[in-house]
Amino acid sequence: MTQAFYELVTRRRDVRAEFTGEPIPGDVLDRILTAAHAAPSVGLTQPWDFVLVSSTETRKAFREHVLAERSVFAGTLSPERNATFDRIKIEGILESSLGIVVTYDPARGAPHVLGRHAIGDAGLYSVCLAIENLWLAATAENIGVGWVSFYREEFLSQLIGIPDGIRPIAWLCVGPVSRLHETPDLERHGWRRRRPLAAATHLERFGDQPGVHNSCATEPDETSTQ
Amino acid sequence: MTQAFYELVTRRRDVRAEFTGEPIPGDVLDRILTAAHAAPSVGLTQPWDFVLVSSTETRKAFREHVLAERSVFAGTLSPERNATFDRIKIEGILESSLGIVVTYDPARGAPHVLGRHAIGDAGLYSVCLAIENLWLAATAENIGVGWVSFYREEFLSQLIGIPDGIRPIAWLCVGPVSRLHETPDLERHGWRRRRPLAAATHLERFGDQPGVHNSCATEPDETSTQ
Image: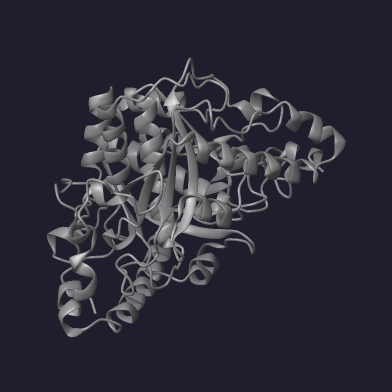
């Protein structure tokens, strides 16, 4: 199991262009959602919900909004970075088989959520743990997932009727795929390189990195994005 | 693989009392951190860091702070809920083999983080995806993980020298365990019951739950906590 799990983690990709549009079998979707729902949560609140969006009308409206937000972001970039960004597909909303909107309800189990009194965002964290379970389960089932985050929360809330006080955390494009790339899209298209693990590991105190030379700990990408 | 993955997701627990204190073999720790570091992240920023805390002095100081925060939370509870809370162990800081503090650096890849211009918390979400990878990898290696969240971020930042602008997201107690319970601690001790998946699943719009009667969608626990 151990080796197979690591292969799964490595195989997982954030999918945009490879959706086939074939339906997700019902039992597969059930298993994927069950895995998400088995995630740990602060105070056992399970503060997530899953809205399954297949309506073409809803997805088209969402996609239009996302493309407008893409332009907003593009407008902030230098010409060079914009040329790179231009090559990158950021969503597969219509090509995927299903949109899954994952939400966060801070009122669940409130006001006395065990483990949240000192850290208000702890419930938010729980929702993300569920999303990663969903993502890995989908990958194990050869189903692709692509997290779209080019949207305003208010727009999505209004689009699918999310009540006040509940926040949308993700729109996930989900469905069968033709393949999963070996290299993440953003690296393949020259947007950004992955960081070595050694640069992210510290001993006892933040900044103490015996195996890392200072020159390696800096990030060459960062200045070039300006 | 698929079945084995679902078993892994189901076996994973939030561990407090079952740590043996035995050391984590170096290659096992490397694999667990590698899995965490392979998580998806907004704009490929990988905004996480891992501070490995083995110092007994640091762990004792952190535990004292956590116990004080436990008292703060206990003080907000009704006598009945307090009696339930009293039975629940909330940390294994000293009994575990290692503390892993996971942090979030919003400056990584900034200012033009692809996928974050409209959702400021997107980087925070990425860190949690890495934590869930870590948690599942540890479980696959028969290593327990317990997420402690009874602390003030400023205290932990000062304790291990986290620079301004970088946030601690979790203190994870990590190490070999004698066993993993079948039922989560909070459920076993009567703090809260798990919610059926059907209550968390909606079709097309939030609130549309064909398979769920309204009476089942409410949460009996919620009123009883007051």
